[in-house]
Image (cartoon, rainbow, N blue to C red; front, top):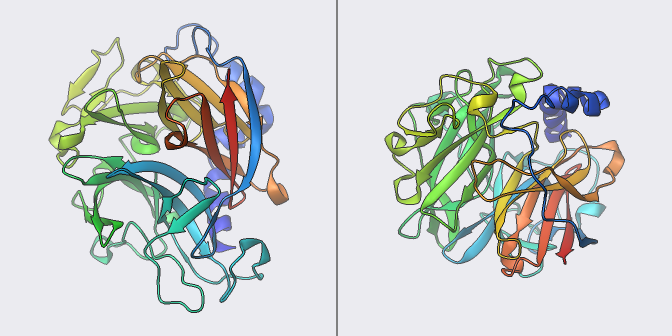
Length: 381
């Protein structure tokens, strides 16, 4: 499939996945005791059980897709999916799809339900008898974008006055990653709709010389007024160590559409948070994590700390690490499940569903397995 070929080409070009066969040795390179991004302390997650729930599908459409990061807007939770490949005309069960390419969009949005295995797709087209999703983040031809451009988005985050925002990464495919941006999201006819993209070229942070903020994760912190976004290193950094650092910014939710209000984490040694001063130095002392997969942050009432849900880069392990501050330091990961790749495909993108149990004693998690969304439930004790 076109989508899968694009995804494979991009992911396999990443140093983290290229190093998959030497994963243990690769990680060991950073165990030098001088890197503040490395795990410290003890993870409080020690006793738990994990149950596989099944695959997630839509009740009103039919497609194959990836990601599905969740976020809240006006009391409802939505999933932001990546590449969304439509099933053949009339197909209502993805497992019964026919071979071949039947159309796609580069991202989409769905409403979550009380059942993590069922979503309600939004922004449907006029296909009959089964309608399919339209694109969520619109491409803009005046910026040189086409319908093949990717807009890898993470979680929808609430801003102010009932509106929200989405961080996304503009991917020009063979021409590379353009930059990370922010879009305004409003409810139109009951559906989250992108109403404005910011930046002269549709993004604020060029990938060549700034971190790809929001590409790793985005989070509306329920314990503060801030939205946080994590991003990978600038694309100009290509060595195996430097390219795997993750950098952090934040902004007050009410100021999310004003670039001048964003604060950048320079690291403790670099002076901490600096408003309006994007990073110009890149390395361990300015970063908050190293060598992690895309994921999602939650505040756990059960453990009284933050949890980062992610997948091992290039592997199938579902991992949880914890911290009392979003700047870190973070504890070592605890593995709560190992996915079995479907058809030899890739497993990636840990997604949290905290709205299903606000006590935090259970955490439902989904992830991508070769364009299937699989779901597990972890019960802590």
